[in-house]
Length: 240
Image (cartoon, rainbow, N blue to C red):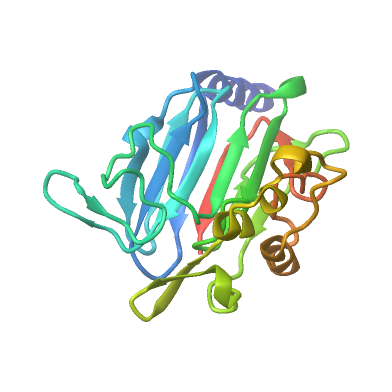
């Protein structure tokens, strides 16, 4: 009984001091992680760092943090941390420091201790795709009717990306645009009179994304099959 009580106290103390995201790179090449906190939530680690293939780095945040993670690819930085990334660039700098990633980019999004004290998390392709990502709870329990499970887009969608949506870097397709980014119309972006879940429907990119990654957000109103909820947990974010 004493051992069980000690474990409970340790867990409570860990949660009180914040949460941890264990960021891993399994893509087979180097990436530069981008991090952006929601307004008022702060941005840990200066908003970015390099992660070699096989490396794992722990990012610590407050228990009520909210924000996003993404992978930048094809980056070249000088000794002052200035440079450019082929995908996910955040203002031509190593440390994003409050800047978001330029689409198209795959996003791992999370709100810790949100409505009802629950964590809400998802993998979003609303802004397009650049690398496979999965986000999984490490020690949480299912929260009522919600699915405490892995959110993921684990397939590389670049090779099969429709021609009109492809982003090229030299001879390689390095990302896949959303139809909103490619066409910039109210219909594809769920804007104006289309800013309504009963009116705005799947775009060509959303259909392609959803058919390959059914558990990821494919467009703005794709909530039903794309939002996951857990509580009292840390998370693994795995690129690759």
